Image (cartoon, rainbow, N blue to C red):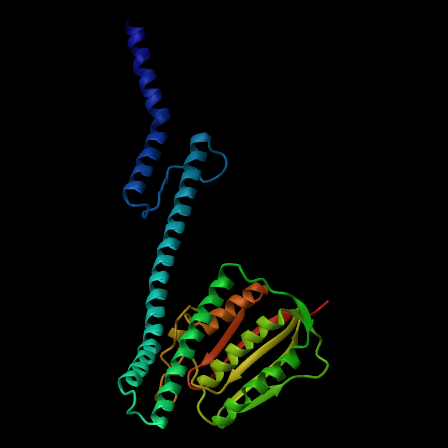
Length: 309
């Protein structure tokens, strides 16, 4: 009887000693669940190398899974915040031109027969301008969604980046003339062709040049330059504008984000989607867009494209 009793006691103690790590793991997982998957699982007793037994490996795998769950939940929360912010921005950007459009049309309807031809033409021009703004915003949203969802694939072809820059510069020349601004084109001769989607790269140049003009005072300068680099050609768009504050520099590629910078006391109009679209386009080309800026001195945006084979 004494031997049986001692055997039972030793067996119980042995079983308790062998399963203590499993109980500790179970309590840690329960605490993780009750914390709404916020507080990570910390299992300090586990050996961190590969020399442990199966229970040690189980604990290490559970800790890894908990870290991944926390990261995914954090990403979902961030995505939800961005979604709400995006909807708020879309509502705000659409409300202003739609309200103006409705106001001008209501004025024409109420004053029918009493408004002069000149006033009618003025109201219609303003209504058409606001309708154009709404159409532009919707087109940009659709373009950004297509880029981020993978629905748009670049069609790579060899072309001369210098010729494309000349064509885009001519398109913006009337706007520069209206602001007494100038283009400084630094395009070396005999530059090799690049391999990219010419239509999408033109879209990037449009956005960068438009931003440069928008945030530069009258009489300023926009410089477009090309230079050879190890893996291809680097394109730079520089301006002598108001620059970007450090607090804005980290967010300028966020959707609908617009800096607080002002030109001649006015905040430039825009949707805050141009740089986000440009970044998505360049990501499709496996390249990145870089920015350097000094408040009060201007900004420089640059990206690289590979040589055409």
